Image (tube, helix red, strand yellow):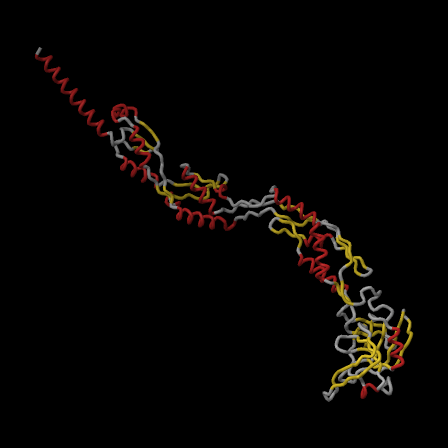
Length: 456
C-alpha cells in the first residue's frame, strides 16, 4: 500500500510540474511565436514581433529586383536602390494575435508556415532619381516613339503610321516599379515602361483631319491674267493646306507668296521694257508710271476664301495700274518721244498719224526717260516751278497732259521760237516736253487719257 501511495504521489507531482510547465509556456507564447513558425520563408520560432520584424527586415534588405526586357535580363538592384524600406510589424502582429498559445505543443510537432503582410515604404524621391538615371542610361541607343502624322503623297495627304520605339519613360518606370513592389514582385518588365506614341493611325481625330485636309487640297484654282489662264498646280494647292492642331486650315502666307510670285512674273509696273522705236531701233526704256500689277492682298484673300470653303475658283485676278487690258503691254497706240532726235510721234493702231520736232529738258533738268501715260488732260493750265536762279515761274499753257507725278507732261510752248536739233541744250524746258502750239492742239484732241507715252 505504501508503495502505491508513493507512486501516486510521484505521478501527481509530475502532473503538477508538467501542467505548470505547460501553463508557463502557454503564457510565454502569448507574445512569442509558436515553435516551428516560418513566415515568408524565415524561421521566427519563439521570437517577439520586434525580433521577428528585425530578422525579416534584415533578410529582405538583401532581396534583389531583376529588370527584364522581352525575357532578357537587363539589370539587378537591391531594394534600397529603389528607395524601398520594409516594415512587417503590422502583419506579424496580426499573425501573433491569430495564433493559439495553448496549442504550442501541437506546433512543436506540426509547425506552421505563413506569410506576413509586407508593408513597404517607398522613398518617392529616391525612386524617381533611380528611374530617371536608369532611363537616361538605357535610352542612349534606343529609338524614340514617333507619332502617326499626315504626310503628302502625290497630290493628297495620307496618314503615316506611328512607330512605337523602345525608349524608357522615367515616370512610367517609377510607376511600374511601385506596382511591382506593392504586389511583392521581384521581376520588373521594362516594356511596361516604354514611351508610347500619343497619336496613332487609328485615332478617329487624325482620320477626320486627313479627310478634311484632302477636301481642301482637291480645290481647283484657275486665275485669269489678261488673256492668260493660270491653272494652279494641285501640288501647289496641297502645299497651302496645313494641320493646325488637328484642324485642317489654309496658310494665308503661302497663298500670298504664290500670288506675289505671279505678280512679279506677269505685272508690268516697275519693269524695264525693250521698245522698237521709230528711228533708233530697239531701245531699253526704264520703268515709269505706266503699267499694272496684281493686287496681291485682294487676290490672295479671294483664293484663301475659296480654298477654305473647298469651292473651285476660276476668276480674274484683282489688279491696279494702267495698261492691264492692252494687248502686248504698251499696245499699238501711244506717244513716242525721242530725246536724242528731239522728235515726237503719235502712233495710232500701229500707224504714225502725226509727228513733230519738240524741245525736252535742258541738261541738268532732263526730261525723265520711262514708259508713262497721260493720266489727265487740262485746258488753260498754269505751270509753276523754280528757275535755275531759284526764282519762281508761272507759265500759262493752252493744253496740258501730265505723264508722271512730279510735274512732267506734254504741253504747248508759244515762247519757244524753234524746235528740234540742239536747241534744247541752251533753251530746254524744266523737264516737260514742249510742243509747237498748232501741233499740240491736234495732239490734245487726238490722244485719250490712259494713252502710253514712251520717253527715251
